[in-house]
Length: 179
Image: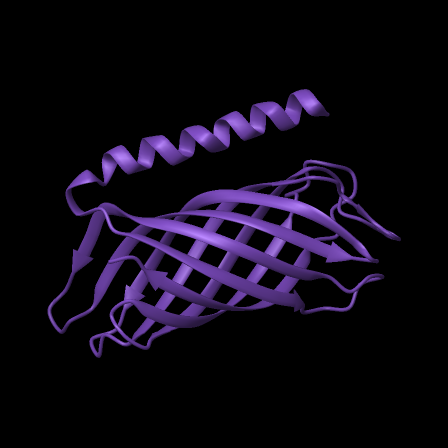
């Protein structure tokens, strides 16, 4: 298990370096916090808390009328909690946003591989350490640098293991673009 965790950690570190080099011409960084709870009752009630770091990628598309599709790279460090137990959850991957013409409202989608420190929470078995997150959401920009958002997130191991119950979360987040 330690060998697999070490390999996953090294792959995760590499994802921090490579996308940053791609986005050099328009690189913007931001940070955020997220917190949420399981949407569907399982044997255990789950909570998720994450710190986020993100940066822009060089690909964006603009249409007449003001619509903008933008790309980002995100890194999440979090805790997944249930049955009185906390587990580290690390994930990294791309995100796309579709900004509406009125600029304050954006829709988003993301898919990220994730590493879960341990997959056992009381009576709930999430199958294994390698997981995947998919999410959709909406963000409201309060200022150029501050936004709040809602995400619906699914976490599962994509049938890599025999047991794959999957978890769904309602998540609220606050993001800050660094000047």
